[in-house]
Amino acid sequence: MDNKLDIVEKQKLTQSLKLSQMMKLSINILKMSVMDLNNFIEKEFSKDLGISVELNYSNQENYDNEKEVEINYLTDEKNFFQILEEQLSYFKIETKIKEICIFIINNLNKKGYLELSKIEIKDILKVSDKELEEAFDIIHNLEPYGVGAYSLEECLKIQLKAKMIIDKRLFLFIDNYLYLLVDKKYNLIKEKLNINDDILFSYIDMIKSLNPIPSRGYSVGKVKKIIPDILVEIKEDEVFFEINRASIPQINIKDKVNVKYYKKINEIVSCIEKRFETLDKIMKIIIRKQKKFFTSQGKKINTLKISDIANELNLSSSTVSRAVKEKYIKTDFGIISLRKLFNLDSAVFLHQQKILEYIENENKEKPFSDQDIVNLLEKDGIKIARRTVTKYREKLGYKSSHKRKKY
DNA sequence: ATCTTGCCCGACAACGATTG
DNA sequence: CAATCGTTGTCGGGCAAGAT
Image (tube, rainbow, N blue to C red):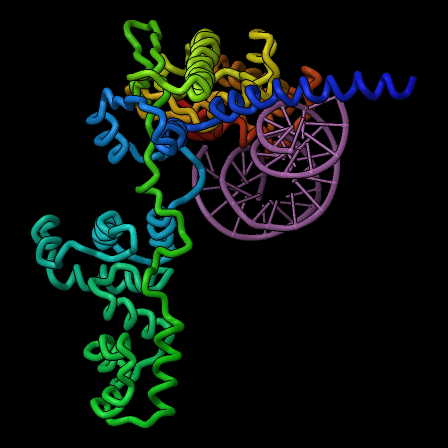
């Protein structure tokens, strides 16, 4: 009895394992971003020479240009450059100097070095030497120390200055003899600088403790390119969308291919096709439910849960969750993460709608204060704190009662 | 002077999303 | 499907600052 069950169980297990291989592939492909998918396709189809598949990048230009330009400004993780910019607000500085700083930050390369000469900056921004110096002073005090340098030497010196280490001979070393250090010509260095072993090795230790690539350890967001999965167009209050099939290379199978590989390729292709289909289905519902979002240029948003869509499509919420992961919509008001369209607790949403109603219908000469709204809501059986009302009001884009007052 | 709002910030709960 | 992860809402109470 037990044995039989065992066999049945095992069969089930192997079945589900076989099934799960395909499932796994499907799930993986579904949750990939366009970039990941491209990498995957390239990797998958280039590793075996036995396969001859034509990876036809139908839109090479689109692929190259757009990905450079479209920086992901809606995802949450801050990149190296954003972190730098953020620090500017810690300094008390004039707007003009701040603008110069921002310009400099945006022109750093991904290592954190500056490639634009001071003369060029002056020329482009039309600023004085003094202003430029002020700006550099601030840039050099941003963390990680060493950003905004023109050379390795300068970068290291900035870091030393930040550590309050000012040593003329050490600076001389850095400026002139780093190449000797690389070659380990210690005696020559000692001779040139006229120092003994102890000092030499203390210098070397110090230099080794510095970071030659300031941006190391930070995500260099500019490198992360986003290619939209979906293109949305709004015409006369109607929303149209199109799946950006051109985002991935076309896969054409050329000659006769080994049957085994052929099957595998087919599996991959059908999974990719499925990914597009799923996205398409999800988008249809999103457009319907979040039409307002698009027609209002992203200002208004309805409540929408992943599970809402899952129910409607008879998919599990996991699938929908994976499908919207790292997918982006291109609209005429920017690239939006699909994930952003799912939000808001329904009770919270209801409360906000109530507040909106009250404010919309209030006597403009005597607007409701937040406390008034608390009382009104309490009569409706909704108990929330004044601070919460304040937050909702702000979220809805209403000013304080003083400022709403009209005479 | 009085009313209104903004703000602080950790702790806790609740609910969905994610993952395997 | 279940365990875990992550996000968001909510609260507190009182003070500072702004509006009237």
